[in-house]
Length: 405
Ligand code: PMP
Image (tube, rainbow, N blue to C red; front, side, top):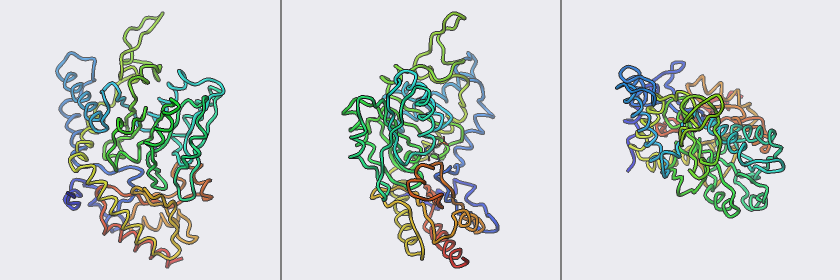
């Protein structure tokens, strides 16, 4: 059963705003999503009524804040179907999750001459941390190629995997092309050679049901702010067997068992990887956001956005001079395009004047831009609250700008 999108929009106060005297059409959900009242109110309520540092206090408020924080970990566990809350690490976001993993995994598992595999369509945050680690360790980055349609070439992946490969890192959904990658197949191929896999779920978690046990991935990262939660909080999931073998990322409070000037012993999972005061207000608000989308039903959100994407593609393809990048068979609610020789920046700026928020540029995927032979695109990305009327506004806006040029 689908939800009533107009009713749902009322939960998001910002959607009622006008920009330059026109109703806001927010199509930059790939960059960040808007927040429902419930999420903001959870934060306000916690700051006003509960606030105290977690884990270290015997007093009532500290206990209550700790309970909320740990209950949030359980909500995240359930949401991605991890086996245990010790596998759920809170971070600042996808970027920090991957940096944590690249550091800790690199320290324990990577030596000179080893190889790390990433895909041709990764966000910089799933390239640069690995590159930095490779540089430190004298290892090599290898790349899974893709077709012109924007699909990964899995036959090539098999050839890339060898006894030197330490890890495969791949996005589940491309933030530029909208390609939904067959990550379960990537995991299967890598596991045949006992190689672990990290999946970047920044662009999948907001749009589809994710089950880390079903995917059988070893690590999974996502950001709270892209799934209607607050900024500054994210998650790294890791199988216990792996996390147990990795050294801490940062040192400080919370991640220790005992400290002396001679030697420090580390805390158990997940705390070993969570040095310092966590953003416990944000973790609670993230859990509130996950409950919110679960309440609507991830299947319903996916169905709504798929229908919107199909409708948008159909209408946009009729625009003269329209070029849509990527044509993967399995695609998500992201559409990158260019119209004639109108520069993406001009298109984005003029759409903004019509109240339509889209993203322009390289989308933190310069290697992918190079592969496509372009400098940037205009990107419209949909969220659970977008409507066909907003797609119509986008199409009419593009038409109007096209006629101007
Ligand atoms: N990976 C992908 C695929 C993304 O789209 C993004 C955000 N654009 C990130 C990683 C980084 O997420 P964050 O900035 O929240 O750390």
